[in-house]
Image (cartoon, rainbow, N blue to C red):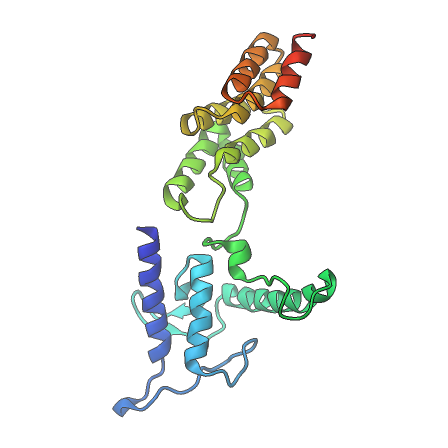
Length: 248
């Protein structure tokens, strides 16, 4: 559903840009105005293609950067009123500079080194923050319940895409952040939630054992490690930790 909506938004955006400032009588539209980073003589179809990659990379519509003349109105693509447009220009310059420097830095010929683009960081979201940071921000005032609510909200919206890490390790990383911040009960809550999604996760039980041990619950830590080893007999780290806790 989300991909369909995004595709629809891009169609509307591209159509609006393609027909913006069109002339009466069927005359072709004038060239794009106020291009400052893109070449000033770049043909309109090429500008449209570039803008299409930006909207897809950030998961936004044209009016995220451009001034829209009323709800449902056309966009004023030449106007510089919105701070987001100015930021976008600086990010375009930064990306260009990085791609110019990378070949020399990695010792590869021009055109052979991996390049970066908007999607490299944004991956379908306007503000490219890591999932761990987003959840930590949510939990700062509302604890683990608020953090988990934000996690579930994002998972519902973005699961299956590349925006956030909803793999087995996602909530484990969030729990480790909470443990580092001495929020042990929050860490347990995140790990228990992870077991709802990944009930056979040896790594989750191993992480739980570390939190339980930090709370002084050695018996609980041993039990979790035993479960971790049961689920994954090849988890040598869990085996070593289990032997250490048992004093073997």
